[in-house]
Image (cartoon, rainbow, N blue to C red; front, side):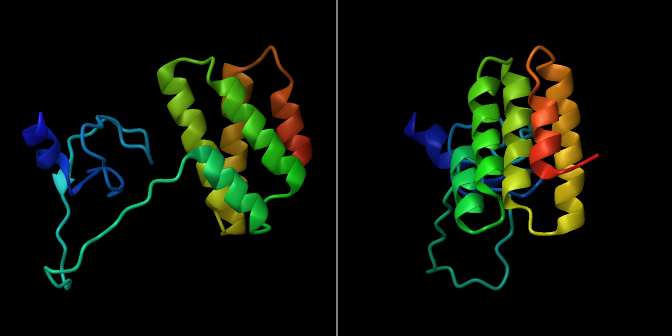
Length: 143
């Protein structure tokens, strides 16, 4: 079993180039089930160790609110979405978590607005019994 873990140390997602922890099949950043590949480390000294800290979507929301990228209302709503999303299928939960993380971390206003619209559409389709889509529209003031 240790051999398998050693095989995946230092692997990166072929789709988004994010680090893939040992034993993980689906990329925690983009939720794509991809074969991991070694990312070339050009320009780095071989003695340098690289530490990757993977942030959960909840941590991204807390950090976004703490840094002023989200209002308190927006942060609470995104956290509520994540908790309600746990009742969805694995794939839907992964997509929701990815979208929430992107909304919480995006600094570019246009890309953030695009991610919010995608999130609202996704929530309308996957959670129609709750009025979370209109709450998102109100919190992020989209039309």
